[in-house]
Image (cartoon, rainbow, N blue to C red):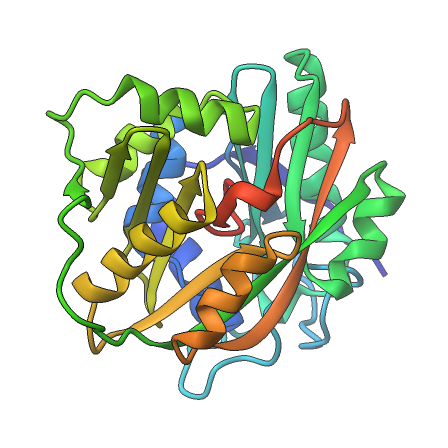
Amino acid sequence: MENPIIIRQMQVADIPFGMQLVQQAGWNQLEADWHRALALHPEGCFLAELATGVAGSGAPVAGAPAAGPPVAGAPVAGTPAAGAPVGTVTTCIFGRVAWIAMVLVDIAARNQGIGQKLMERAISHLDDLGIDTQRLDATVLGKGLYEKLGFQEEYEVVRMKGIAKMHGGLDDEAMPWTQETSVPPILDLDFRITATRREPFLNALLRSNTFYYSMFEDDLAYAGSRKGRNAVQLGPAIASTPEAGRQICDAMLHHFNGLPVFVDIPAPNKAALRWAKSNGLEEQRRFVRMYRGQKLNDTPESMWASSGPEKG
């Protein structure tokens, strides 16, 4: 049985509720990730509230991209009352391309069709703006719902996890990339490989996270990171050649030596997967990258790491 819900624009004051959902799902985001989403596209971040009370069954929403059973010790809310927040979704726009993410529903309000309604609101918002391409990274369980809503499969993204281990010294060609660094060739490389203008997103990540870049003749590469609840998320990482990719990703492992890391690698990049395995990282799970609308001509073989499921 579905219950009436109200979907409104998400506010900064709603971030603690968003973090409650992240903890329930066992995801890796921090408050900073919610703040970044709201800063990049505030009018495209939505929150669902119950218009009436609903009995919480604790069963998963059909097709919802949940990360599995709740983490031990994570807070689980009781039956939501009328007006209580029950779910979220975010969108981020890069010109004619947009990403949908953070589709989360309170464990006590699942099996009410809330996840689908949030997705429909996000899609409608992006359609109204004339966005050509809508993308997302889905779990296997979410894939059926997204196909129902018009999304098509592109390729898999493999999450590798492990402890970063330092091998030798930091490569001399790997230079810190900060907000004060002017690197137009690196931004051009990112666009050429991703077919997406991501400068605002990359600049937002640069404000408080570690990035490296290298430019040596025709070998161009960069790799970034962001802090997480469970591990440091390495990425995005883009390279013009396999050797440049290995070197820049080695620099990231060197920087985060001894810390748990996640690396989301597009499955078509076999060299990156070999690099991850050779450094002791193991596969944790897989996502399915999907699109709705116009398919992008990106080059996943040159993507050494996604930034994560939120923005590709």
